[in-house]
Image (cartoon, rainbow, N blue to C red):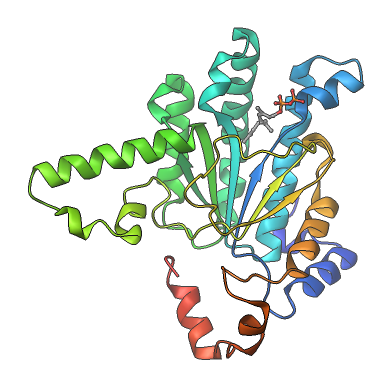
Length: 280
Ligand code: FPP
């Protein structure tokens, strides 16, 4: 029988690469990806755009598996933006079909590998069939403790900030919240990403240098990695390169380099406590 556990499917070389990346504990805890370039990848090969999306789905499979094997705790994929609804009807249909197919085909394997599926965005705008399977998948995997895979679907960062402001305004009007209580932490708790730590690393493929309305609040201090590679060609090797690049950077959060270097590193106890606290 084929081994379905990803931890049992790794080659020796793969295991060594993962070990090398995890040494030192500097892997990003949350990696968010703007998957771009499916259309251009197809065009360069005189194929239909749909073929690019289909190949892009293979990259999704590989990156999800690699993240789980590596021990990245949170992976967020920008799979369909609110603006993507403006694409030709036929392309939107292809993307919705692929999404449905991915969820149907992969759900059992994701579940067996401990993945918790999550989604952000205006989900009720999705076709009923996609919405239903998405809910089924989130329900089935809700108690899993491995990788948290968040799909951004019909998502817009501004829309989510706007939605949070509306929810806060309702709570203020009902007397549940006073304006003085609206701190950054409280504000973030109204976003759909509440419960997820901010992304440490944002990867964008295909060389475009934009955030395209992705996680606008949450990426305030994220490191950004842009590669010329088109999404259908972005597989674990390219992912590991992005990780290496990230790990070589110094994250300063507005402080000076000297301050960062003299900060006491966390104790083992603090690291264990952080691992149990999803908001840390
Ligand atoms: C951007 O490429 C990609 C998308 C709009 C959709 C991403 C979808 C997938 C990778 C396939 C299915 C997803 C899941 C989660 C199963 P583009 O079409 O904008 O490329 P272009 O800029 O070269 O035209």
